[in-house]
Amino acid sequence: MATLFLQMKFESRAVKLNRIKCIKKSAAGFSLVEVLIALVIMSVGMLGIAGLYVHTMQAGRTSLFRHHAVTLAGDVADRIRANPRAGAGYVVGGVDNNCVNGGIDCTPAEMAQQDIFLWALQAGDTLPGGTVNIVLDNAVVPNTYQITIAWTEAGQNPPPQSRITIPVFGI
Image (cartoon, rainbow, N blue to C red; front, side):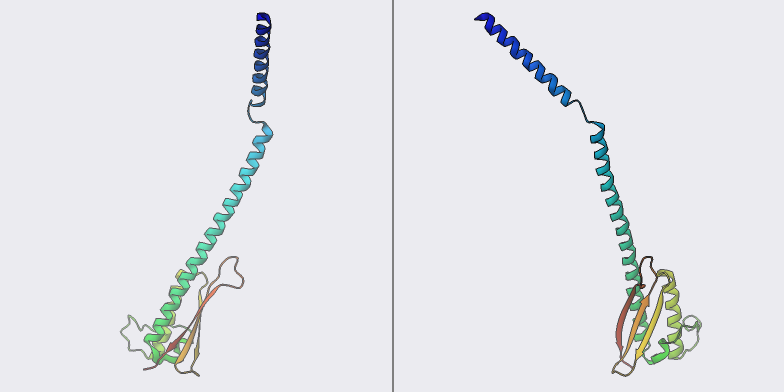
């Protein structure tokens, strides 16, 4: 009986050693195929992150341009409200009449041209290809001005624009 017990103990020890060898062989490490699959999955993920980053940068640039356009439209609106007697003077193009620093008494129409000239300088500095279009509607009371600001931006067709309509009460 003692020999049978020793023989069973020896066999169970042999079986355990065999199992340990099998486990060691199967858990020896990663194969090259597994590593390549992991690299492909990581590459696809990184490309997605890079695409998202580029899209975020474009959206940020567009947001900045829209902010500048709204600010400039507000500036033009304030200039029109400050000079309500100019009427159609804001509809024509801007001219440097030297009204601001020249010590010259300008008419309301000349001041309107000066305002548009100064605005065009600001638009050129802050918006790529920035243009302003002002339309006066004096058929309604009070007169209204529709201010449209457009600019060029890569990948945007038609070009983006910002439009506001303001009433102006004459003095």
